Length: 294
Ligand SMILES: Cc1cc2nc3c(=O)[nH]c(=O)nc-3n(C[C@H](O)[C@H](O)[C@H](O)COP(=O)(O)O)c2cc1C
Image (tube, rainbow, N blue to C red; front, side):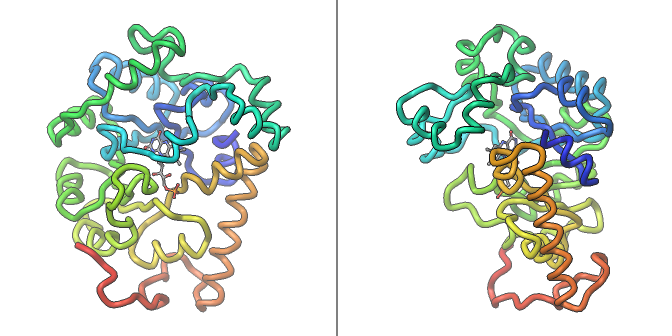
């Protein structure tokens, strides 16, 4: 639903390795190529097959997430007992009862597991073997050599997501990344890491002429998009902003989220006296002294 909404709105969609819908499922229900995101997993054979499936589905770019070689400690996920598929507990059932439509759709859906993993990763045939696979699969020894190998394995357009300092941005450009995403994973990985917006400007100044710099983490409105563009990003990605729409109202909810952001962007540009996105620069911002970090 999200991929279809993005396609109809005219923006790229990135499907996650850990999505519930498989690459093939999304390809079957969309017309245009989408981007595919991979985590840096240890199992070369699995990575090769995963990339092969993405190529076969005509994915136009590979997004390699480089800031999740291990899972951060997510206190709220632990407290709320987040799991896929959701466990039926008194709390979760009570929660579903306050969101009747969503709850009924959840009960009725056939798509409950990680569609790119179950039935594809060695030894993962059902949900019970999935959690031990997840704990084992991530490559905690991730380094630039391994990222280089994955770039070679894909042999197509590559975006490195999760860059948060100038040195890493330089390294990514050196390895030939077509684009990078300045991101702190929506603040979900390292508690205490800098916000990505504070890191953006220096990264753009250093590598903006070598690779395309995209931005995410914290985009909730069209004004947020405009601020990132003004600080040099070529584009922004959204995580929670569209998933809130998706949870609330499916495909239409994602379209509404995109429309709201687009309208705010348009209005803010107008009020700043700009009509072309390419004319946006830092002049429209009042940036507090010491805001940018290296
Ligand atoms: C529920 C959830 C699941 C996510 N799953 C992935 C994922 O599978 N792969 C990935 O690279 N990033 C993942 N992210 C991070 C997003 O891609 C993105 O970097 C982040 O959400 C941006 O911040 P925002 O939510 O403030 O827009 C996830 C984020 C959320 C909230």
